[in-house]
Every structure is written in C-alpha cells, then in structure tokens.
Amino acid sequence: MKAFFARCAGWAVSHRSRLPQWVQRLMESAARNPDGLIGRLSSALMGSGGEAPNTTVPAAEIRVYIAPTNYAGQGFLWARALEAADPRVGARNMAIELPGGYAFPADTLVPITAVNASAEWAAGEWAAAREFTHVLIEAERPMFGKQWGRDVAAEVAALEEAGVSVAFLGHGTDVRDPDNHMRLTPWSPYAEDPRTPVLRADAAENLALLRRLRRPTFVSTPDLIEDVPWAIWCPVVVDAARFASDRPILQGERARVIHASSNPLQKGSDRIEPALAPLIEAGALEYELITATPAAEMPGVFAAADIVLDQFRLGSYGVAAAEAMAAGRVVLGHVVPEVRDRILRDTGLELPIVEATPDTLGDVVAELIADPVRARAVAAAGPVYVAAVHSGARSAEALLRNWIDPQ
Image 1 (cartoon, rainbow, N blue to C red):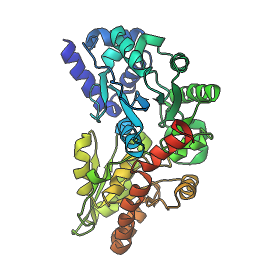
Image 2 (cartoon, rainbow, N blue to C red):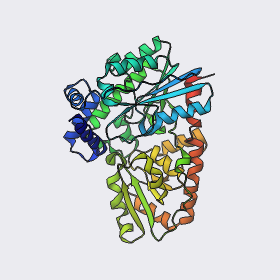
Image 3 (cartoon, helix red, strand yellow):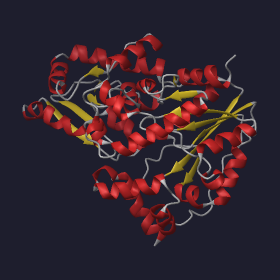
Image 4 (tube, one colour):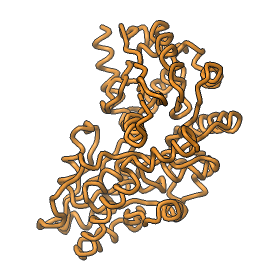
C-alpha cells in the first residue's frame, strides 16, 4: 500500500499543474506543514522512507554544505563550481527527493518521507552539517527535519554556535513579492494565480527573516535583486558541454519551435499557441509543448529545435533558457529592461534572448524565420554568453568573494 501511494504521489507531483486547485492546495498543505493533519496523513500512508543517507564531510580546509532544495540541480552544480574554483574547498549538497521529481544529481539525496518523519536521519544530518565551515541555505527552507523544529532561524543559531558561517540563497517565488512584480511588468502572472495570497505571505515571511538576520545573501536570477536589494547575483550554472550541439538552425522547410513548461501559468504557456497559430496554419513552423521530460533528455530536446520559447510573464530567465542558449538555439522570452541593464552592468555582455511578449510573439518569430542570418547570429551568441556567465566560474567567484573567502 505504501509503495502504491508513493507512486500515486509521484504521478501527482509530476502532473501537478493539471490537477484541480483543491488537490494542489492539499499537496501544498502537506509540503508546507509536515506536522499538520494532511502532512501526518501523507507520512502515515507513505511511511518513514526507511534508512536514509547522511551527507559525508569532505576532508578539506574549507567545507561548504548547500541544502536543501537543489532546484534544477543547482545546489550540486554550485558545489562543483566551488571545488573547481578553489582547491581548498570541498563542497557537498543535500537535496530533498520528491516523488515524481526530475531526478537532478545531488551529493546526498534524501526521500522527503525521511526528512519529515525520521528523527534518526535528522540527528545524523545535523551532526554532519556542523562539521562544515560554511552552510548555504537555499530558499529559506529548513534543512534538518525535526531536529530544530523545522525552524530556519533556530538552525542558523545552532550552526553559528558551532562555529559555522551561514549564508542564504533565494531561488524565486520564495523571495519574489507578487505586488512588486505586478508593478514591474504588466505581464505578471500574479493577478491571475490562485496561489498569490500564499506566495505573498511566504515571500513576506522569508524577506522578513533575511532582513532580520542580514547574513550574506545571494539570488540565482538577477530580477530577484528588485526584492532583495542587498543580495548578490550568483548565476545558475549550466553544463555547457552536455547541451552543446553542432546542428545548424533553420535548415529545414519549416522552423521547429518548442516551449518547455513546468509551470504554464507563470511561463505564459497558454499565450503561445494562439500567438503562433497563423504561422502554424501557413506551414511556416511546427510547434511542440514539452512537459514532464526527464532532465537527462533535455539536451536532445533542445538540439532538435530551431527556436526555444522561454517565458513571457516573469520578466527574467533561468536554467532552461541558459541550457537552450548553450545548445546554440534562438531563445525568445520576456526580460524586463531593468534586468537586461543589470546583466550588462555586471557582465559587460548583452543578454542574447530575443525580447517578445504575448502581444509581439507571433511577429517576432515571423521576423526571425524570414531573416535566418540574424537568427543564426543570435543563436551563435548564446554559447559565448553561457560560457562567460553560466559556466560556474562567476557563481563561485560571487560566493567566494562575498562570503566564503572575502579576502
């Protein structure tokens, strides 16, 4: 029965955006409050997860622990970037494994059932973490289960009492203020998102924690500095070699256009097909919506495309766009001028994502198809930009210079 329920939970997580709102609210309740009624019921049905691994402590002068979300595998990649940048550093990441997740690599992958229910795992992970010299907390989430009452501030106090330096890293909705975002771009999804009251409350709570503790703070995308002005941009990391493709673009009779979406509302996925309909009907392109594709298959998905549509409502970009740029594809998305200006100031490079909104998307795609020379120039700029900004070197420098080794 527990195995059956775990499979059902995995299916629900991977198809979450398609489920009724009341089901999504139940899932959020279990995730947000594991000790509440729904959370305890889920734990009872899925079990404690059995034995779970604890993180091993590297034998290094500087030991960095990154936990617990590993969104898009970034915790793992930041750890590798730090080790590549400084031979004194040994870094490890711990990630909580959700049923039906995307199976990103992690140094320590712990089933959520163990995190929620196993006091033995929590004590062992705390014992390991306190042996590190530095701890980077992702998304303001508790790392040690019940050990400190799932209280991030209590975890920080305990780590610092043990002599550990603590920093925070915001990933997105955890610190993005919906009201501020709606002022930033008219395409903001928050006016329509039924989760907005919850997201608003979560962001307010997390921002209050960050302001109160005022430890070194980083953000994974440059738009988030609008919400956390004292934060440092620590760019997402892409394994460029994995995504590199020598397949030329716009060589066939029809352009192949794709959109990969894990959150249709936030990415504006519903606006894409209507905008492209005249081009599809005219035979100028073929369009495919990519959903629930394992991470291991994404290099092939991007390589087979000519044009990759990122997102059209958030006003920034993230891992998927960086991967598509690394593949040498033409990437389109809505990136607000403030973010483009910040990138140019910080890196000296123009962001090679072609600007488009739901209103302009059809015209922009038509112009690119009609001008393949320009399209190929845009595509060629992608790998150059990714090598400079998203290879891991800039991310490691941000962490080392502003926190780990400020000298």
